[in-house]
Length: 330
Image (cartoon, rainbow, N blue to C red):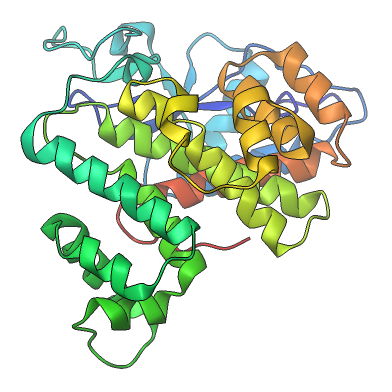
């Protein structure tokens, strides 16, 4: 039986009229896969996404067989006049019938940060630097006290039911102890990309970087890497968009950070095992089938495992953007 959906599955985010991530669009431009591939597995995985909180679409006009399979698992056809492409800037006004925005407008250079916004991102980057260098808790706490937004979100996270502490946490030192350094680092990385007043890119950037980081982590696990290497993979995915976030060359943003040579080589030269995983993620984002096929061919992964990773990463991203979690582990 010929597969109904191409392997690997490729997805990209759609923004709503306000520029927030609100829908997923399936790339169905290459619907045929190998003759021995099973259509049931990818369709079943896509059914999970349809119940994940975001609208799930495929482009209208696809083959009737694929249309029927997707419709049965909760995906909807997206008419061409309901979506508009933007690659340079978020449109201030949209035609009345347009509900969704596709494209990479959120990767364009940022508006120049001013005042509190600039100070907040600078402090967040300093915190990432301190945590990555395993600085003393008192140093980290002193910086947290300078940013009420970061402080509020940290205490809210630790006091959430998901932490299971059984008591209210009221001090930064308690919060840092409970989270642990690895989770504090992960949370700070996500907070770098979280919403900032005056930067309309923030919500979509957070969604994109969450998918990247989680995919990198899960790919590393599937390739047999241990927990420290999985954490490094997550960091590579997260840091790979810091240059876009700050509107600066990535090498310049990375200078003050204490990171391993493997992470640095992956980020700046796409070298090593981590660089290979980053190539997988980036070629999937570009919907570059040939490049993705080549990257995956070099990894000890089958198509089903890769597709499971893609769906898990997008489900995790939906939780992150909904404020439900920042703590997922592979």
